Structure formats: structure tokens, C-alpha cells
Image (cartoon, rainbow, N blue to C red; front, side, top):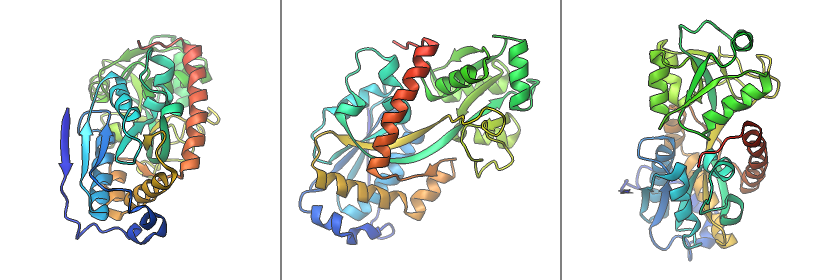
Length: 327
């Protein structure tokens, strides 16, 4: 376990949301002690970066310590279970990656949490598409060429992911289902190992998060074939989307959110949401997150709840059709 408090000077990070009437009304009850942000992965990844960037701004504005606690394990289920059992008072928040909330329930047995029953959605903080990348020596140079090659060579191309049931795994599975192609999955223990073997030529391609492969694509170590969003990504304006490459309506990526334990009082949820959105929209916070390929979305609570329910249903069908079971 890594438990590192954020001790940042408030003078340079004061937030405008302190003047919001909604937040002012809740000051008497929230926060009245340190706020803990549970992170389901080790330090240094997107979830951790989000927690620390947002937590620093929150601490400066709220006048209470914000502690980021890394609790990796179980494909994110360890931290999610702890968050689900935390006191519902707004003093424990959880960084819920999309896979933890929308994919785990379909592939992992005996989960200690239920995303719809145990959590109150606050906001989808950041999102980023997965990028279809290939080793430069792999012949196809675009999506139509890749589909043609895969159909002529079923199961001859291997793709690496950060693990069974990950966003990368299901994005490629969805691509295979939509294009009628067959590939060989090579799961790794994380995205970094998948990138290393892809650059080295052990695997041919992958659908990895754009924040994971941006540097390798920019350096020419990997070839970008397409991005899994409906619009082109500002970091790579010349790379087409999968949708415009012939797979209509295709989307594949990940997002990272904040949730609170279900049962948290409504006034506290409103205050926490307002605080989080203001923190995410701070120029320093937004710049730190966009530099690594993420878009700050800072959605409403209702928009998050609607998307959560929709994606739970969508990934259920992909998992069922592919017969994916992680354990």
C-alpha cells in the first residue's frame, strides 16, 4: 500500500468554486476532516496522475488534507471493494477506471462490489481513445489494408494488451467482431510490457490507450493506423478514426471517473461534484492531464450515470460473444 499525502501550498492553487453557493451550503458538513482518494493501481499511471493532479487542487481550495492512497490488486477490485464499504460521507472518493466499473462485473467472479448498487457516480473526469498501433514492419498501413490482411491470414497476427478483460482487450475483440476477423490475444501484466514487445516485434499490433503509446508513435517506433474515437485526436490530427476508416460508429477507449459510496447524502454529492469539476478545470490540472493524451471531460452526475449503465450493457454483449472469463 502506498499512502502519500498531498501537501501543496494553497496560495498558488486557490479555486473559484469556493464562492459557489452550493459548496458554501455544504461547508458545515463537508469536508470536516481529510479526504482520501483511493486509486486502484500503482503510482505513476493515469488513475494515479488524475488523483494527484485533482487532489492537489482540492486540498488548496478546501483547506483539508487530501490523501491519495494506492491500493492495487484484483484488476482494480481491491480498491473498489474498499471504496464500496467506506463511510458514505464524502470523505472517501474512488478513481473508477472504465474497465473496473463496466467490464469487471462481466468477467470476474465473486466481486466485492456492484457498480450500480454500491457507488454514486460523480463525474467522468478524463477520457482517451485507444489507438490501433502496429509494429512498423507489419505490412498493413491502414484499417482497410489490415482487415484484408487479417481475413487472408486468420489468427496469424497477435496483439498484446495489459490483461484479460482490459479495455484494450475488449476494444480489439469488438474490432474483430465488427470486421469478421480473427487475431491471437497475448495478455500482459500491464500496458508497458505490451508496448515493449510490440516495439520489439514479438506481437504485430494492439489497441492501446493513446496516453500509453503517444511517445512511441511520435518517435516512429510504432505506426498509428487509427484512433478509436469518433473524432480525430488533437495530438494526432493526421491519424484517421476507425469510424472514418470503414467501421461505422466504432468507439473504443477508456475513461477515469470519481465515485462516492452509495448512500452519501445528496447535498454532499452536489458539493463534491462541484469541487471536482472546478478542480479539473483549473488550467494547471487540465494542462497536466492533456499533456499525456487525455481530454478533461468533467461530466455531470446524470451524464455519468447514463453512460455507466449503457456501457455495462454494451460490454456485457462483447464479453458474452467472445466467451471471455478472467477468473
